[in-house]
Length: 384
Ligand code: SF4
Ligand code: SF4
Image (cartoon, rainbow, N blue to C red; front, side, top):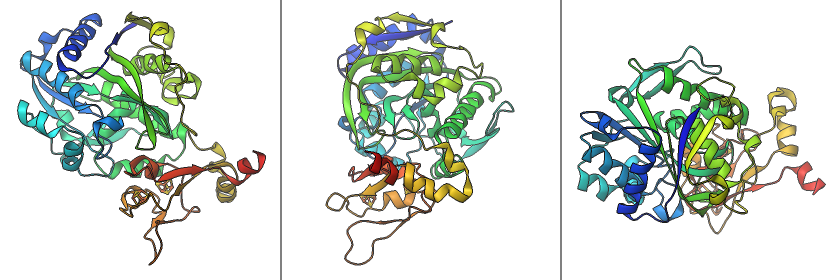
């Protein structure tokens, strides 16, 4: 059994946020006195250089509240995050983190320094190259944003740890695990490594920003901000994610990190082992929360000979829209399959090679103009 605090918080005003976080930590039995003298990595979600109102990133006030709590209780916070494609400097500026870091004197970890985290129990991967800052820390405070995700259905506490993998190495993981189930399994291996790979083990606490979450075609700018008014706190990332999904009313069976995660024996084995403290899920539930249009590619993509035909017939493909696209080429930079090329003279959108495309949707995730949408596979279109 593990406790998760589900608390109502109607906005990002600092005093109320701090009070809510402190109550949540207390509710789950976490003593803030353990911050004393500790080096504490704060890991927000800074997917891209996006404004806080877009709900793409953990809100800067949410980060500030957590950082102030750590400092006020004698801890030494450091921010560690690696955006998908933007430079961390640009992401910090756009997301409103720069003044927070300056006011509180919080250093930013150098993510070019990495270390190997091993987890022999991994099913898809057993060794991970992650930012050195996580090895240097005594504690990790994970600050995810609750969002929908085109590949993994949701991104929350478990998936937020993927940001510990520096820069473009994340794209390589998408290329290695292009399918939803495999990629979700890889994320669980990484989570297992965070739980079991450090010597000594690091205390990890998860404070999830679900005050304004993201629905629809998240996790990037194509998603839509959606008010949930919730701060969800726990020591078990799976339990925190489970509560987030319950509050959103999304379909838990489509969330592969939860379905497989419960079988891995990391802690709890089902949602029934989550003790929700604070508000009742039923009282916080959001009506008509929009799921992503599509989550995960069909397993038929495993068959090499028919892969290309199957992709065309069954899977949605990312299509950029002239008029919205500014030819910034962030999609090209992130694409792990090198399926995106520069526009020819006179063209208004980049060239997409759908034969090479593995449908990971990283391009859709990072496009700052929400210029990429999903077009139905041919057979899906005909059936419709
Ligand atoms: S589709 Fe989006 S990310 Fe790609 S070039 Fe156009 S604006 Fe940039
Ligand atoms: S084109 Fe987009 S969806 Fe296709 S592989 Fe590249 S980043 Fe992934």
